[in-house]
Length: 241
Ligand code: GLP
Image (cartoon, rainbow, N blue to C red):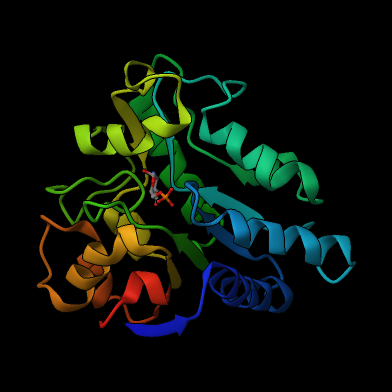
């Protein structure tokens, strides 16, 4: 795992943008894996800027997001669909049908999972996957204990994850208890992975990732077995690692 140490959040976002831009410009039909959370917001702003300056087009790009809450409609301000639309999609020229998120509503979520996997492989798999990391080492919504072999599936969210994400909701009671997420194996199938980490509160997670053993009790640790992973982290998150 290559580690790129940057001064701050802005630099992290710029580095990540450069990696994505490279894929978007060089691939005929680029496939991006996208993430939500606070961490990639700066990256999305950078991409929008490049598009607005006429340096980038997303017309031939397909995207697959990592996850979605179960039970939240697309127009719910806390759904990840809404997040992606507001923070990226509505500002760029990506055709709506090329921007994919698993749907967290419907009667047959198992089928949603299968169809999502199929769609990713039909697109030729993800060229570059953006990831954040949860305080407990989760990637996407793959909580500790998730098998490394997992594909897109429904998960019960950890209480600690619900607490960490409660800041976006009116109260913790409104945070869904389940989510649908690409599995760890689905993520590992990406050709390249960019893990973004910023801020002191992620320090312990980064130290465990870099120095700890590979274990299902810390999902992000599997990334060390991927041949093409870049961890872009700022000073605050890296500390003395
Ligand atoms: C959520 C998302 C993850 C994200 C994590 C960290 O739980 N499902 O994909 O990486 O939060 O979020 P943040 O970037 O806000 O710290």
